[in-house]
Amino acid sequence: MTDSVIIKYFPVLLKASVVTIELTAIAVTIGLVFGLVAALFRISKIKVLNYIGSFYVWLFRGTPLLLQIFFIYYGLPKIVPALTLPAFLAGAIALIINSGAYTAEIIRAAILSIDRGQYEAAKALGMTYLQTMRYVIVPQTYKRLIPPIGNEFIALLKDSSLVSTIGMVELMRAAQLKASATGRDAEIYIAALVIYLALTTVFSTIFNWLEKRLGKYEQQ
Image (cartoon, rainbow, N blue to C red; front, side, top):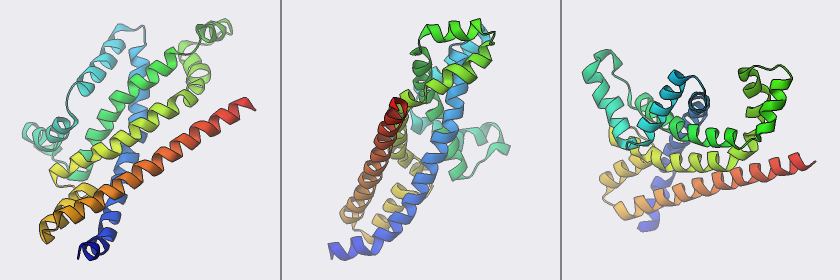
């Protein structure tokens, strides 16, 4: 009976896991853009930009992701009715903003790890600050970003389950619905657990491969 329940609903959970992957990929990809901007703000000598970047990181790293999801989905419509959002969009925005805050610190640390002589050399060539960042510093950080960005992706893949609390049907929500409908909680949640483990293992392997690949490329 247990095997039949898992076999019957496993495809349903697999289909829902695609939504989980899509949501995570969107959040991390756009979060990288948010993180890059925030990181550049954080290291800027312009105080206003520095304060904005620091406040953004402080706010979204210092509050629970679940609270951020609830505020965007339930709170914002109370303040501005026009900002009533569908569950997927609200969840995606919350994950993007949250991921951006964590990614900002990852990128900032990578940028600051670049030897100071690189800045001096770019300055000697007559490059502006923005040109130095765009053409010299940022391109050198990508290899250093792979491991922490990979960790952020895996963490967000698991944290995306929190959007189930606003009714979005991803892997966790699909498991909850099927467990409630069948009463076979243990079997359904074990199936979901197996899928989550498979996803984190696959993506961890991919990021490890990328890190090694980039390392070999630099040595050539």
